[in-house]
Amino acid sequence: MAINIEKYKEIIESLETKGVQLVAVSKIKPVCDIQKLYDLGQRDFGENYVQELVDKQLQLPGNVKWHFIGHLQSNKVKYITPFVHLIQGVDSLKLLKEINKQGNKINRIISCLLQIHIAQEETKFGMDENELAEAVKELTENASAYTHVKVEGLMGMASFSNDDEKVREELRYLKILYDKYKDFSSSAVKITTLSMGMSGDYEMAIEEGSNMVRIGSLLFGARLK
Ligand SMILES: *Cc1c(COP(=O)(O)O)cnc(C)c1O
Image 1 (cartoon, rainbow, N blue to C red):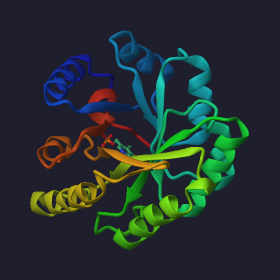
Image 2: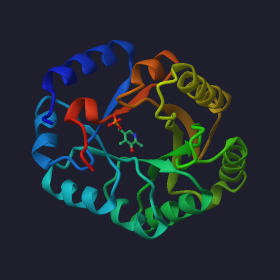
Image 3: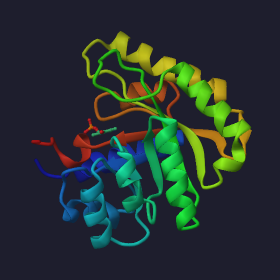
């Protein structure tokens, strides 16, 4: 399936009026498709795989804001820290420590979102409410050990389900956690971004308070892989 320019224009227009940021999820899609949205003004793109992201970054303009939205393995952090705009899927303190270490090496503060597990489906990564509380506590009490990361918000993926009420409940739960930490601010934590909503549920996610959506297949067509 091909890239849908009309849909892009429709989505961007509706998001702008609501103050919601669009991350165009371009995983598995070719560089020429990314370039088409770039030419229309889109700058934020999301990728799930480290090697693919590194390859694409080399082929596209330097002012693209690359979001890493996949599951990140600690041993691959170093490949993306030199250029990544936002690492959205930080699901453990161990990973955050490695990001901080790699940021320190190149003297760059790396922006991150903590991924929260909200779906009842088991396959999705993320912290639970207690792990989130512990992470915020650690980042604050031990702030001098986290000089090269900045936690800017929360990210979550609701279940892939036709049960709208279930999806809405999961989104609502993430919003409650976001509100709990929203006004919290310390040197390594300042929660201002709530990244939730994908092709299937972004409208509902915005209704529930999202300010960043990650949309792939609606823009670029279905992924065959
Ligand atoms: C693939 C992916 C998306 C986009 O999914 P679509 O349903 O194609 O919009 C959003 N967020 C994450 C974390 C993803 O892996």
